[in-house]
Image (cartoon, rainbow, N blue to C red; front, side):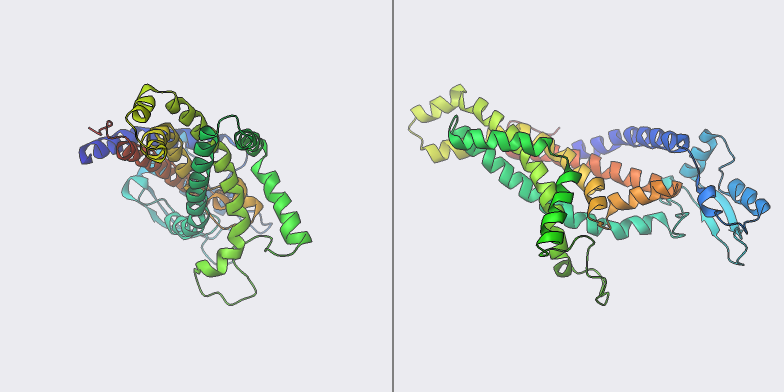
Length: 342
């Protein structure tokens, strides 16, 4: 298994390069640039602006800028807005040497900013994935075992509604009901800003997690329950299930070790994408609930044309997505002994 995982990691390197190139070109193709954001000041010096553009490499062709991002370039402190303070300074070594650069808007190392936001994203992603899969698989298997019953019909209807309802709309409805009308849950954020900041505290964030986790969980349940039901119905029609009954095995044993285990194999395929998407930042949900995670950080970086921060968030999200696919491969071998990683 170790050899397989190492080989898959090496195979992921070209994928990361492809994602970075495509993202970099799309980013440069969008209107505006970070210089416009930085120099939005009537006291800005044109010569300092031109120097800043040259030092950041923004006056170079796109290919040269991409190389700068990979291997780094040298630039020095520049006074852009005439306040006597340098707005950008240092030497960037490049992504290939572990340096994602300095955020143009925040004037902090990109990697430090991203690492600070990851715990907030984990607070939403981990509970949503666990609850979504546990409840979704349970509903799907139970609906298959009670095929054509009222529970089966209800689960199918709710699955369609859950997949069709936009996440941002459901989030806004929850805010109106529970925050505006009932006033039982906070409207957004991660903690009470009127209280003293004691650092990361999950217990202070629990009331703020309820609605965003609920929205993410409902979306996962809608998809997983439908897949689990279809796969379980297919497994129930297989010959080895009838053989298990003919051998005198109990229904609970057959459901657990024959039906559920084999029905989970296709469902696990969706887990890698769910892990990558949620841990990479639930962009819409974090924006709706003003949650300070990786997704909201990416949106802010795009609006500010913060090129280093945008590319850092894209690369980290791509790495998380690829690791999620590796987790899927490992779970395959654990659920089905016939599958071997070699």
